[in-house]
Amino acid sequence: MAETVEQAPLEWDTPLFNTARTQYEQALPYADVGDAVAERLRFPERATMVSMPVRMDDDKWHVLPAYRVQHSSVLGPTKGGIRYDPHVSLGECAALAMWMTWKCSLLRLPFGGAKGGVRCNPREMSIAELQRMTRRYTSEMMSVIGPQEDIPAPDMATDEQTMAWMMDTYSMQKGYAVPEVVTGKPISIGGAVFRAEATGAGVVMVIERACERLGWSLDGMRCVVQGFGKVGAVAAAELVERGARVVAVSDVSGGAYAEGGLDLEAVTEWIHLHRHDLIEFPGAEAVTNDELLELPCDVLVLAALEEQVTAENAGDVKAAMVAEGANGPTTLEGDEILADRGILVLPDILTNAGGVTVSYFEWVQDLGRLFWNRDETRFKLREKMTDAFDRVWGLSEERGLTLRSAALVAGIREVAGALTARGIYP
Ligand code: GLU
Image (cartoon, rainbow, N blue to C red; front, side, top):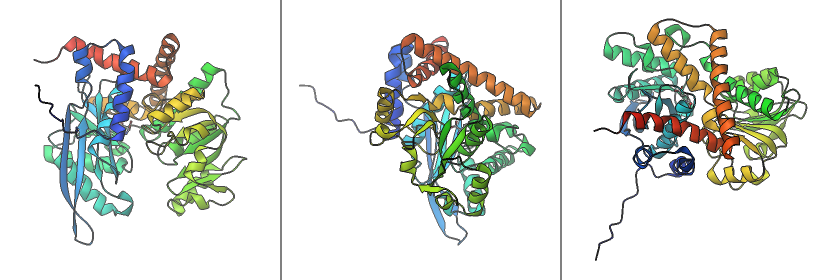
């Protein structure tokens, strides 16, 4: 009698990776992919996990887990952010790396997906501690990153300063300046103009295109934005520029709600003065992050964290359209409920792709040592986002799919087509 061998759970088997995997499995039947190719893309190609010592300002050493997961190198170097967060894990990085693969291929960028990070509490760390941690992380990952191998960028709690330290550490080891090893750098060392605003601006380009298709006008629309960081703050400002009214925004502390629309400049100033205390913003009603998601509005922008709209609250979302500025903000169950309720979801791999698209522009400019201006960059970003949106919209109409499924199918097809053409080695 055959012996049944119990398999050990795979290291990346976590809820977020399960979401990414399930989305992949659900999209596969529409993507016309051969079995071998489908199997090859199910898991990341490589995962690097280290534990690294970082000296704190009180001279104590913390040994922190750090990761870099590379999902697919079929189309080119892998690409994706580095996050500093207490929840970073191998499974989380694997899920985010897989989404980066589909995001890059959907946008027709010559990259595969990666993601990495350090499990730490960045809010409790000083600038000096963050710098030592970033330099150690870069040294640990020297053998797996590189301009033709894997190109990091900012993500949660990392920014252009983090990228400058990474670029410097890498360059010092090489002996010459290598700006093209990371994107999202300061402009003074080869960063692209408009990169900092690109994700938030791209979110609104997608919302605008969707409104055009639906015959809706952004002028006068009520918008709610969860997360007032690098993505949400820019998206909120871009919405207001187009005549929309942002009635509520939030940060980690909670949200501020004002029916007549919030003065975003005052909100920004308040956040700078009172770090993460938006809940006390004067002249507005305080709301929790949970309440904010249930406010009646035309557009709800999710620009905070993953797993925000779930089976518990999706039934109470009162938006006509949900735009995913964050990666994975809607769980599988939440997504199904929104779809059943006829709420249009603009999916993350399309909607927040502005960041990596301008990262691609930055890498190209660094390699060519020739730089573009803001208008050129914005124009080229709009072209890329609109083209991707139109392909996704067309596929969703043609095959009767949600925009998320259509985006995944379109992304998977590109990678699978390339892998089929290259063949699986040896
Ligand atoms: N972290 C961003 C994302 O999730 C940007 C990645 C990049 O620019 O490489 O898309």
